[in-house]
Amino acid sequence: MYRELETTLRELNQVMAEFKPVLRTINEKPNALIFGESNTADPIPAKGKQE
Image (cartoon, rainbow, N blue to C red; front, side):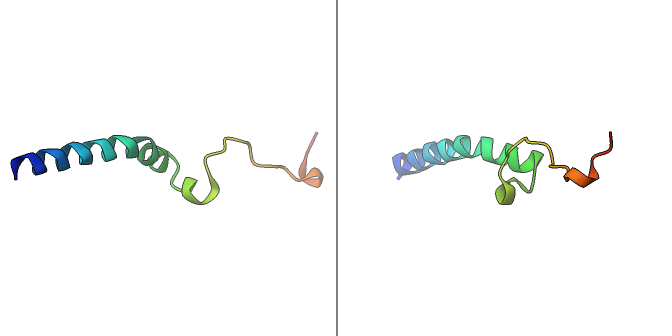
């Protein structure tokens, strides 16, 4: 029983470590799940540009 618990905890730690980058991204940019994490600037329509 103790070994099973130890194995389960080790696996849980591994899963949590794998989720860290995803959770960090969601924390920094919550809409990343919908729009991805591209860092491109918002497009400006041609008629909206002021020079």
